[in-house]
Image (cartoon, rainbow, N blue to C red):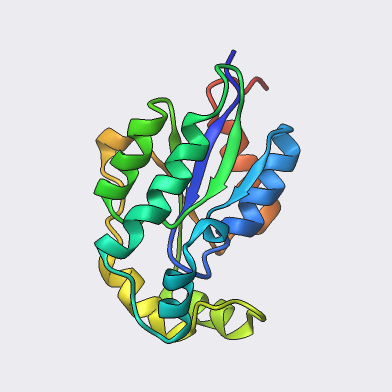
Length: 169
């Protein structure tokens, strides 16, 4: 059976990286920090408080897609990527058709609090509103799992594991 291939998605501060890293470790597959693939120009824009456009995101999404398409038939991976719009998710799915998405979604106040407490990240809390405005929650035909970020990280990881096709109890 093919190892899991997942995108942990959502706005800044939702816990994509934390949940993704822990999940990848538990599943024994590599974790890819999607933010690490942003071109320097994108990082500079975000650090300056400028929201990215669709055009800005193209090279970044293509870099993630290239990493996904390079997976072998039995290889798995967990990737953190905001994947805010359906068109972005479709672009990633085109690279790896069996890709699954997990949306970490939560209350704006909690997201704001988390961003305020985060250290050493280029994404300023001021851009949260623009991300929430752009977010297109996956529609039912995308079969994405949506989880509440108010849950503890280990609980989120367990819930994701329970929804994987190969999960056995």
